[in-house]
Image (tube, rainbow, N blue to C red; front, side):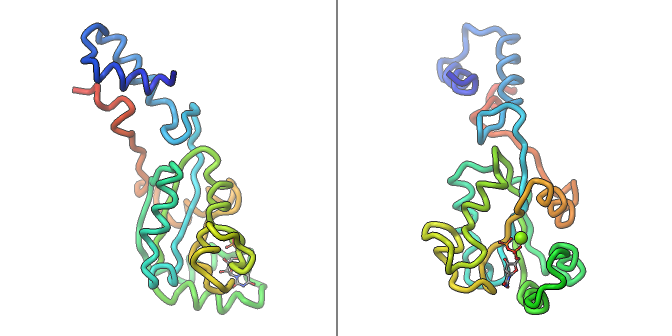
Length: 192
Ligand code: UDP
Ligand code: MG
């Protein structure tokens, strides 16, 4: 049985038989595990952004819901009007593409909601949740497959590798804007 589950069960029994030392060990041990994955030390993070069309179509909540119900942990969130300078760095690999000028116009056409999600294999899983870049190729059930019909208005961005994720997170967020937090059913209940 997972230590977290044992910890929780003990709490409901009143924990009268456990010593303070035992409880402290359980809490510290539990805290070192990823809540979303149950795997120790897994802290992978990715950048997700609801693009201007997603915001304007009131899809922010539906997009966040998919990440929450999958079990990932939100550690950063903000709405911003992205500058051309920020986007030029973000899309630095696409500068020479013919669609780059229209991509910049699209991405500056309104506010964006930027998020950092954390969990086991979050980069790869997030790309699966989004679906193909071209919504015409995206499977039903994916965000792009459910909400969009054209590649130039595909609702949402996500980092495509762990290396890119680190670069994008530091581009869009200050370190102080990202918050490590613990789940109430994983040990915090033992603290006075
Ligand atoms: N894009 C476009 N036309 C294209 C290819 C891409 O407008 O032919 C836009 C689209 O918004 C896409 C973004 O450029 O999401 C970045 O392209 P990339 O290939 O990195 O796709 P993504 O990583 O977003 O799936
Ligand atoms: Mg990309």
